[in-house]
Image (tube, rainbow, N blue to C red; front, side, top):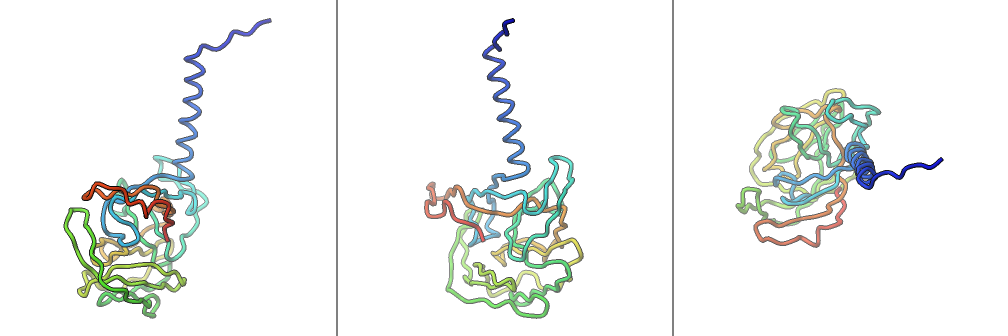
Length: 224
């Protein structure tokens, strides 16, 4: 008994379907691309950086349902992508500063976690290009969070929003590394666990649009 061979179009169609399903699964549950649209995370992330975001560290989310399983908490200092609490159709990227139960205070451009001032080291002034095309200048610091994570921040002399916040259970306090050019938890509140999309991992492409050139030195940089 002989078997008819499948038509070429059917073999191609089945192969493309398998590839499409694999691509959807990888993007939904493992890793997804993300483009940096603003200067709020400078100097860690620049406008025009293209990054990969690991989707599984904070739990598995079912696409287009908002359902999340195997929830896992972020660590202090993680650079996280999440649904913007005021509009879940928008992705935001900030650094997780406050964990549930923490008391966060921001005063005169100084960060306090549970009553202790977060130490930082001044490195000098840094000029940078903003998303709108203008140039700004801020002080460049190395900040050391209580998790002993060192990371770069930009800070001006004037503070844009001071206050004290107690982080509720199941939620997180997030700040941009560009402290005077970031709309973050100081303005709109906390990030619920269910809004977390994934952890920023690596820069795979970086395009300097004003100068129309590739930032080759940033390619392959790990994000921390």
